[in-house]
Structures are given as C-alpha cells and as structure tokens.
Amino acid sequence: MKASLSDLPCFKQVEKVSAITSGLSQSCFKVNADNKVYFAKTITNPIETQVALSAAKQTFSPAVYYHDQHWLITTFIDSNNLANTRVHIDTKITDTIKLMTKCHQLKTKPTKLDPEKTTLQLINNGHYSVQKKTELLRLRESILPLLNHNKNLVCCHGDLNFSNVLINQEQNTWLVDYECACVAPVEYDLAMLIAVNNIAEDKVPVVIEQYEQQSHSMNIDIKLLNNYLAFSYFINSLWYSHAYQDSKDIKFLNLHQQQLNSCTTKAI
Image 1 (cartoon, rainbow, N blue to C red):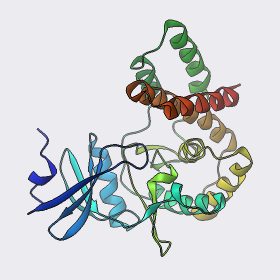
Image 2 (image 1 turned 90 degrees about the horizontal axis):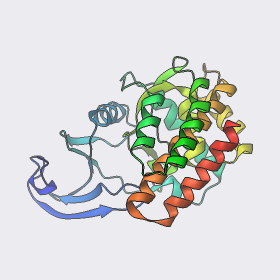
Image 3 (image 1 turned 180 degrees about the horizontal axis):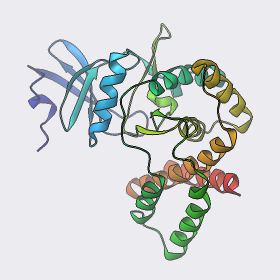
C-alpha cells in the first residue's frame, strides 16, 4: 500500500503539497515540509530510483532525499525546464547533450531496451480498430529488423525531452525523470532526443557533432541513428495515442499524428 506524502518517514511535518503539471507527467509534486522544499514523484519501476541515485552521486541530477518502492523524493530545484526557456535550439541541444553524455558514462545498468516487447505492448494495450492495428503491426515489422541492439551500449535516459532538463538563473542544468532509462545503443538516445523534441532534420548534424565532441571517443553510426529515429517516432506516436485515449486532450492526438507521420516518412 502506498503511503501518502504526509505519512512518509522522511518528513516530520508536511505543510503543503502542490501538484506539478508542467510537461506531460501528472505524478509529481512540490512538497513544503520541515521548513524545506522537496520534489516528490510516484514511481512504478525501481530502475528509475537506481539510475537517479547514480546520477545524483555524479551531481548532474538532484540529490535523493528519500526513496521507497512508491516514492522518489529529491531536493527541489528552483528552476525552469529547458522546453520553456527562450534560448536558441542549438543551445538547448548543447545543454542536453552535455547531460546525456554524463548519463551514458554511468556504471549502473538498467534493463536492456526491448523494442519487440515495447512496441507489441503499446499496440495491444491501445484501443485500435482491426484495420488500424494491422497497419501498425505492418509498420512495426518494417522498423524492428533494422535495429541493432548490441552496438554502442550505454545507460540511456530514454526520454530526453527538453522538459526533463532543469536550468536555473545561473545556467546550471540538471537531468531528471529516469522512468524510461535502459541499456541501449547511443544512437537510440540521440534518436529519441531528436524525435521527442521535434528537432528539424537540418539540425541532426548539430546533434551528432555535439555528441561526438562531448563523448570524445564515440563515432555515431548515422544509418543506425536513422533506424532508431523511425523506432522513436513510432513508440512516441503510440504513447501519445494512449494519452489521447485516456484524456481526450486534443494536443495528444495532434502529437500522435505528427510523430506517426514522421515515422512513416523515415521508415519508407
């Protein structure tokens, strides 16, 4: 049974709990307790805590104050997220790539990415007509055989949305939200960065250049990156479809169609 925030042993007295609704997650809270401020997130996967702890030790993620099987409590960073800042896209890419390379250097090993299982679950759990499901399965079969699951393996963040990068007034940055962390090729994390942020194709060379400069020794396989781009667009489209079915929020339907169109173009 999940304890409420006010019942957690890490707090003596909780004065205020405020839901954080920026971005796409509804399971995050700002907690005022014991004259301090904390960030709280509900978790369903122990891997998220494992990677968050490791990243916190390397100081590019907020310090972990408390965790159990349901909650991850960290220090609250008074900041904005990169998605909401008015800076040039090249700067956003640079800031995110710096954090990505640090994540890739972590020694912790979450579960290996399983594209076959992930895509099949997303399709089977969605409410699709027989025709739509058949189309999605056909698209899936055109994408998966082109992926290489054993090259350039690192600890990937898995959801490098600019909204998962915090930045304060001093331009310090932190990486958060390791719910999708996995062991996968570098090209997958780069592809998801491009796909989830709708980065234009003419900026892809900037992404590659920035990563190779930051990592020093890694050469990106451009063909594999393109294959993982199709995969990333595909799973994003399925995720947004689920979000729309659950919420009926038109923004998710638009994101679903946008990602699906990009996937279809990339997979041709």
